[in-house]
Length: 518
Image (cartoon, rainbow, N blue to C red; front, side, top):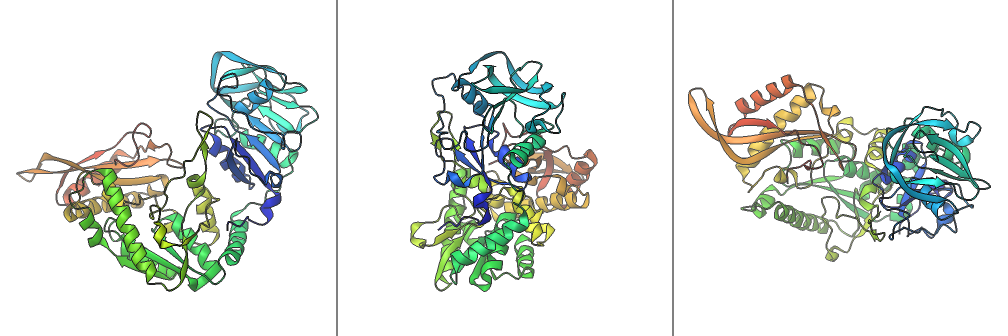
């Protein structure tokens, strides 16, 4: 059973998703105000909609004038709860409530400034004329809906914001959730705190207290097994469960032979220092055997996933009467998004190292972090006093170095890449660059090239270094690392790591490239 967090039943925001790329951003901004919110597809409004105190309608790639208009059922919401309609939501309200929406003469995209603000309205408290907003739409509201009152305009968009007289319904044609809207956070605060009167009590500490209380009720005296990865999510999930059920939590940390240099022993030590009940399982030979002669990236992932499940299953059978499997699933893994055609498309992926467990394991699932975004997981971990070196760790792919070695995998190639990666990561730390980068690593390329060492010709491997900035991994920009750093790191790799004679730096962003190469 999924237990609802206790006080939040009376103090949460419903975000209806119409398929905008910005919907998750809205949720993150609301959470930053210490207010709990949930994203649901526009056509799957939760049955307990009574428990939400306010509603936000997201943007959409669709047009309200098109054939494929997305129709939400707002009968239980409009006029009954405070509602903020953003972009598509605003146009929807206008188009179907007596106003007029037409194709705009120019595509309204990018920065704009408010040229008029109605001063005496709570919605724009603390926001003045000239404030920068972010537009992203090709339709525009020509006429306000019935009882619509104009609240703000820009030079090109007359009806940039309005409210409906007699309701707590507000609408805007710009995106307050985007960083470029300088007073976007203030606007959301005005709507949620001053108009909808939500309390700002969603904090890391309150999350820990409520989650631990709920886990105690949910799990009782049952035993729980958790696959640790060394990453932030599984580690924070472990500490929460440990607080709730203590020694009844059994953690398994599997060495797949594809971890970073010395990572297996150092992470095990860290975990033991946290008071967790952890068993380390060195299955590196088993994984490397399964990967022998496999070059296709997808087949590599499948082989690693399969062996992980086998090892994990073997180990969990050693624990008597285990009933639950804990996973570090986080909110982006479980959000259902809306496809462009209007039908909800489940984007729930097989998350975690446990690539979707087989039915024969017969374990119930517990996911203490399923309400949190990645940055919130870190904040929760920090509030519990967790080691900053675990909380600040860069994301590391489940298949590990297997997808950073292009082509087939051999113990020798793993050794080379571990050595290269260690030099790169250690140097990032000693130059105080590690925390400024979201993720960094090295790729071993399946090419040899000619080099000269001493007076001898060499014909050895080429490695590519990669460092990116990102907030959630959906998009990423390459990091402009100092030339002096790259120079020193390249020299050190070539001099120290036998088998490498060339280092390159990857300067591609995502999209079109991915963060990992495979």
